[in-house]
Length: 288
Image (cartoon, rainbow, N blue to C red; front, side, top):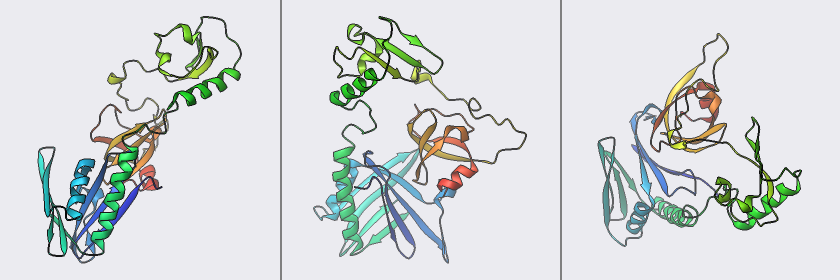
């Protein structure tokens, strides 16, 4: 089963794109662009067109219209003081999808394609976006016990009731079963026999106040200037070395932190501006 979906519906003057970056997101993006003239279309990378976020509940209402359980449905979105009217309605054998000033008309078989796609995405997101994500290393007690048991068998016996730390943030933790109030008890599923393990973890104090400052890990030590571009996006996930960013174009990509030359915070859920080295954006087609 694919993790992402991207379907385009082109017409003479208006095109519409339906995108789902991850089956674990409970939303999709619908993007519309117009023909400027000749063979030239609006470019989302230059801030042209309209891109809206459709929630799972809104997807269900759109599907009701596509199934002709009701003839029309409308709502509006408000983003940065800008209101966008959204409506879906039938007109004889055609269906109109109106997003602000972008009006897209669909006929058969595109109506059937959109209906099947929306129906699939609804089922997919209900199954995956409402459950635990697979990147959780301790997603179940049985997996946690097995993981800790393997670590226990691979490590030497440390001194009792002692925690040793080094500069790589490696901790040797002993007697976990006798210290229920420590932060390590959040990993459920071990038994009393698994009392001595090595856990590698990154220690972050007061994460709500963490704001990554430019130049800490990505200083330019040479005299040559770095070619960068300013682009907006939303942080989806973060690892010690990279950010998963969904850009305004709808494209989602992993970007190395060493190539980001601006402040950012993974605690911000909305759009942020990123100053990113141009070669990375070109390689990943993130700015298109």
